[in-house]
Amino acid sequence: MTGNSSQPGTSRALLEGQGERGTKSLPKHLDGKKLVHATYRDHVHFHRTSPLAMSPQVRECVGWLVNDSAEYVVVCWDRDASPPTLTGGDPKASGLVILRKDILELRKVGSD
Image: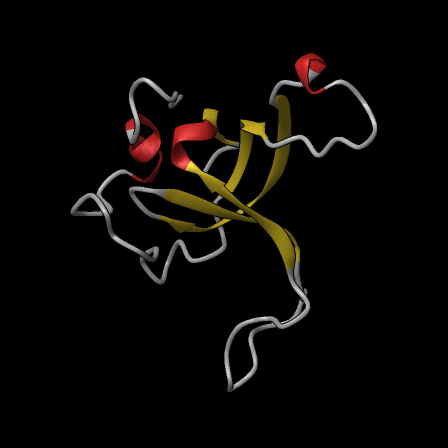
């Protein structure tokens, strides 16, 4: 299951039956449980070097898909192992927000 910049949104098949395109959050039964591998183009910060030698870098990450919208995905690679607190969320979680147009591939890891 792949998505690329010329066909934004093709990786939405990853969450079959999710509903209308543009949904901002996952159904409760999938919330943070779907393990994914993402390959994406990333910005490059440069300092004291030739700008003409710079270009976006291809990166990859593995983590839990926390949010899947028409414009971006949120992948969390580090989080609390215990259930969420009454206030919800994990203030110490780490991950990435990746623009969908920069995703080269987004695929499910493992089987359900």
